[in-house]
Length: 74
Image (tube, rainbow, N blue to C red; front, side):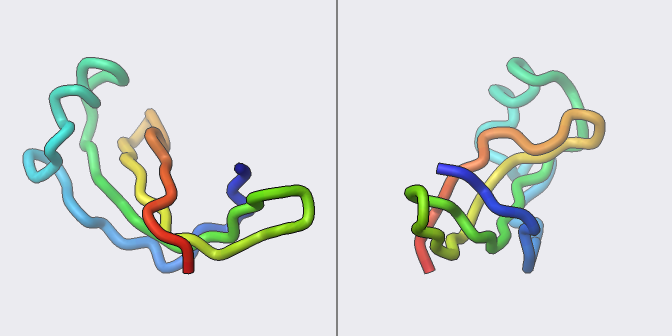
């Protein structure tokens, strides 16, 4: 599975202490201003098949996107 940029319609779902996995994120990736985000992007499922999907991920300044996952197919 491969994400085909760009990711559009990006929204912040939660930030700071509103994130359930905040302790695990800080332990694994380090301290930062963590935010949980969602957006829409094209995902290549097989060689010639690409589908739009809603993606969720965590992001912090200086660390970038981590734990990117497909939440639902559109």
